Image 1 (tube, rainbow, N blue to C red):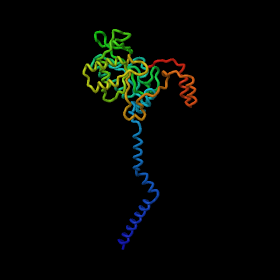
Image 2: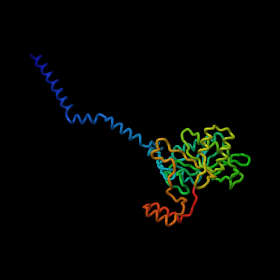
Image 3: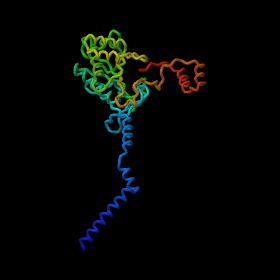
Image 4: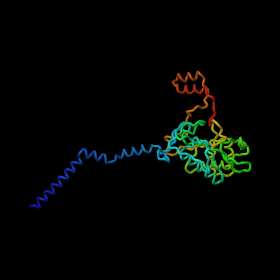
Length: 315
């Protein structure tokens, strides 16, 4: 009898617990719990899609923010900048007022300087302005605003072909001699080695190398005579160019790297109209009035303000 009662009690307990479990499973609270615990596949996909749109900047050295080139070289900003520092193969021109840039640019300049020095002992690359720490306008420049530009001095030799160091940019005449120091000559060997190092850098892609037409011709002629690998020669012919506006760049290279992969939604490859004063055609008063009447008051104001400005060349 006791055994039968024990069996009945055990069956009742099992039925009761099953009923409670079923009741909990069907309750609104349980449904909400299951809904919260289970991941929504569509939500996951959406989140993944959104995250893929975010610019993939490299973490800054102090871990504070990613390095990003925002906007264009002539109207941009720089986030998480890296600083270029002097070393045996590289010298920052003093005062070093704008030594900041993307890590891709800073790394490329350092690697190229070391590569040239390794091939030609005693070589020291003179580097001028890159960008300010947070980007934006720099006095004397139309660009250099987004961490992708650098001014780099030329390598020189004396009349005996001996390597000579300089601490400032020197203009070069068409005959290859330094304008203010005729005992120095533009060194085709090392300057071509520098250009080649930039163009073949394994981590950074060069977009433009601005230099005067005369020096571009010298460099390409030297490369052809030396039997340089044809694809590199073609790349050099495309990258080397004299700017269509501003100075001819007969005293330094102006190298600009391409937008890093993953930043093309925030980095603009080609320049926008500069926010600073540029050479602008003088507008007639009737044209200004016509602009105002058409509703382009901001543009008219800009044109009016430029009428009294002197046309100043900047780098």
